Length: 568
Image (cartoon, rainbow, N blue to C red; front, side, top):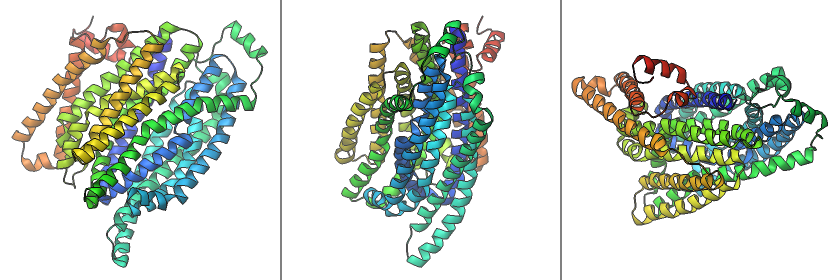
């Protein structure tokens, strides 16, 4: 039974992880024409507005799926179906008020926020994004409801649907509004309207995508939602024993007040922890802008922040996997804790951390060695010299942010909600200190932001590891989790770098520098690098048969490895 539950946990996590990867890829692809339209400067406005949007989104709804899935999964594990439905109703009330208030703050406070950021024209982007916060609050409730029931498929489909609509509308609206901004520049003798209007057009797609995803969820809920707690919940979340059936009949239904209290007590630590964890980008923006103005470099703020935004696009793709796995691990661990099954708890922790490292370490090495072709492919119309250096240095953050994200999810799933908050707060304080030092003393500019972010995530990882060890006494297999993936990734990276170098020397320069040529070269390099990485893992005995079969597509990999004589 434990093996079945662990397998289901990985499968459900994989559904979200795959959806997350698809969404990030779509997000990366549509940002290519978007940045071609609005430029790096327009991307600077876009990135700044999104940092504010993300914080207000966290306060209103970002943590709703996590909190609701945790509260609902515990009740379903005990067979308390009526209470699970009541959790949903209370969550909708919260979403109405929190989403509405944060939407108002962003819309009516846009001018003040833009002034504090030293970017007056970002006001147009902030106002355009504001309604999306309210939509996302309701969307977060429904996602949490289905995730808590152990069904990640609606969330995965809605995320992909949302991103597709977002991509199409964003590019179209950015094109039209940028052109409108050019006219405004001529009328008002300005240069920034085109960039700001273009960025605002890019954010219209965010709201349109969220609205379509919400309508999709409403349809799914109307058709199947009322039956989920009774019929469609998997055996992993609902206890079907005779004792559970007696409990259903005799247990007293929780009052709405009690459920509201439980939900808030669950929500607030996650909310505050997520806010502290994500507010670093907003603080970075304010601190960086003020530092550059103080140092007499204010004219380059928006452009440099646009480079940072382009780096974040690449950085976020592999981190999406750990975010998705984290969403799956919380309700799964909550069930295991409720059942007092320590062996299952430890197994889930080990497997989730190992799976995260198996993805994030090669992603880090891959970004480092292929930074030049990747940046030149995605942002072909820009001068990418600075971006390539930033990506090469900042690729390390992929490992630390992935690990910190999954360990946050583990601590939340175990019920220790204050630990991630405390750890993130300590890391944030140290992060700000390092950022000030690097900006004002060493004057590293945008590199200071990159390095400070790496320091922040690394500290969170270290403190989370101590917290997990304190509460759940177990030992992670360092060799299989960190050492072997790193060695295999180093081999993979060397092969990828060598292949790209050979292609660059052998093929015509016009082909290598063109988008089509870069696409072909990168596809070949990445495909061969992935094969080399997998073979290296198998040769180094990174996992045995049982461990491999518990991973996504493990059976297929095992059959191929067995045919090749790499496993028995």
